[in-house]
Length: 393
Image (tube, rainbow, N blue to C red; front, top):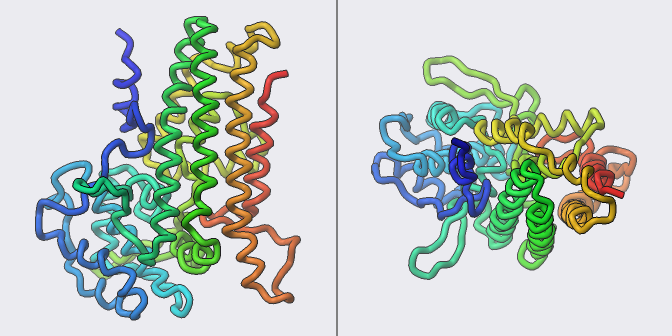
C-alpha cells in the first residue's frame, strides 16, 4: 500500500502544512531545571557580549549530559539552538573589538556534539538554528518572536522571522510540487496544471515576504552587528578546537549559517527540474547539504526517484495551459532568486564597500558569503540563470 503524502513527509520530519519550517512554536524552557543555566546565559546574551563578560560566564557553566536531561525532540531542538548561539557568541564575542576564539570549552562542545548527533546535524550554528527552529509565539498575545538573539535588536528579530516566514509560506509550494509529481505519474494533466499554478502564486508570495525584510532590518545594522555571528569556524585559521574535557581536543571547520542551506529551495529545484550543471554551483549545492539535517538531505536524494514533472511537461502539447503553468512557476522561482540577489546587494555588498577604504576596495575580487562560498554573487546569479534556462519554449 502506498504511503499518503503526509505519512511520507512525516518520515523526513517535514510538515504537510509548512514544509521544512516548524508547524508549531518552539518551546522556550525545559522541564528539567538542571538545564536552566543555558537559558539564563542565552537570555542575557546581548548584554554579556556588550560588557565583555560572555566568555567568562560560559566558562563557569557545568558540563551537562543532554541525554539524561532532555525529554523530547522539541527539547533537543531548543537545546541545539541555545548551545549553537552560545558557541557562536563565545567564538566571536564582541566581533568589533575582540579576537575570535579558536577554542570552545567542554561545557559547550560536549553537549553540542551529543545533541547534534541526536538531531542528525553538524555541531555548529547553521541555517536551521537561526531561521527554522528559532521561531516561537506568545501563547497569550499570539505575537511572534525568536528564542535567542545575539544583539537584542528588532533588526535581528525581523531578519530571522522574515526568513522563517519565507520558509513557512514556501512549505505550501513544496507540498503542491510533490502533488504535481504524483499527478504527473498518473498522467493527470489538469491536476498538474492546478498544482503548478498554486506553486507560482505561493512563490510570488515568498518573494513579497522576502522584500519586506527592508521594512524592519537596517542593512548597516545587519552587516556590522548581525552578520559577524553568521560566519563559521572555517573562516578561522586552523578552525575551532572543541575541548573534550579530558585534556583532548577536536578541530572542526564548519560553514556559517547561509540561506543556501535552505532545504526548501533545493527541493523545489529537484521537483521542478532545475539543474545546476556548472561544476562550481553543483559542488556548492552539495556543500550546503552538509549543513542541513541528515533526514532532509535523505529527502532531497529520495525525491529524485519521483515521477518527473519536466518530463511530463515535455509530453504535453507545446503552448498548452500546463506548459504555461510550469513556466509561470519557474518564472516565480527565478524572480524570487532575483529578489534574493537584490537583498544580498543591499545587505552585504554595499555595506561591505562602505566599510572599506579606497585602497582596500577591489571590484574584481569575489565576495564571500557566510556559508563559505568564494564568490557569492556569481553563484547566486548562476543559480537564477539556471532557473531561467529551465523554462520550456
